[in-house]
Amino acid sequence: MAIEIALLRAVNVAGNNKVAMADLKAMMAEIGFEARTLLQSGNVLLRGAKFGGEKLEQLLEAETARHLGLKTDFFVRSAGEWNEIVRENPFAKEARTDPGHLLVLPLKHAVKASAIDTLRQAIRGREIVVANGRQLYAVYPDGIGRSKLTIGLIEKTLGTRTTGRNWNTVLKLATMAADF
Image (tube, rainbow, N blue to C red):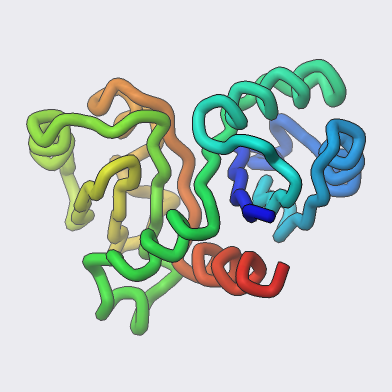
């Protein structure tokens, strides 16, 4: 059975959009999925989905609102797509030396190269971004917390929703998917 990786946007951040991972797992079981979670930031591995991609995202968003009272975005990638994200990382050095400051930002939709150029022009620090399909890779050499390259700026400039996971989490999800 296919493994899907589902990331929730902006849960359990600064006390907002609280959701217990046990409740999320229970909801997933109730709607027919075997689920495993990682950390408290909304990382779920699913087995049992009959479809993936946008259709699964929509189902998960609707069920999370209905069961948990939480309106949030889901970003779903198959285990194969996730492995491709890992393989195609354009920042191998940063992945080795500073994985906490390397983010993968799955996008709801692929964006045009011109939008990525506009985003690069909006960067006011030393951050670097590279897009690849429905993912954005971003390096925050001076840290993420005070950076002006925020999720809000990225979404506004690209015209699509996103969420971010640091490289350590990306690799843990890949390992979990392989072992699931």
